[in-house]
Image (cartoon, rainbow, N blue to C red; front, side, top):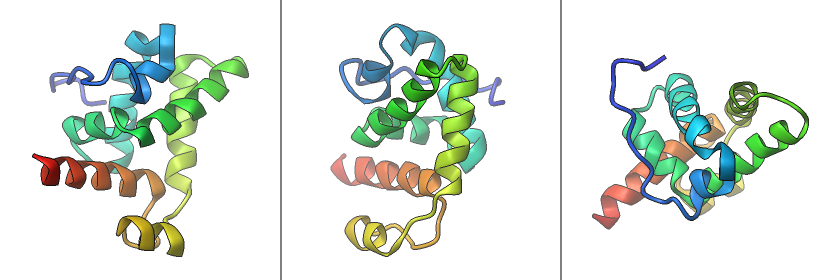
Length: 121
């Protein structure tokens, strides 16, 4: 776990992962940042950008499904992380977003969001 690094705060409390997680947001935020960073090898700041995006909202939907099924926030986040890492970028998604085909879905979208954020700056 990435315990030596400062956890970046969300910059999107109304939408993205934080807004979708509702009452679970403050507990789930550091768990999701660390789980995704560990799985993808990306920085916590890159993961923050992903979680604050519309893709982070979809990730939170997956976590919420786990919570609805009775999982703890940590278990739901870990299950969603593993599921998203198990999927790969296909031809259509690669064409639409410019993410290399075959890359794990979660890794691809964390990197994609980070690049989009840099281009917008």
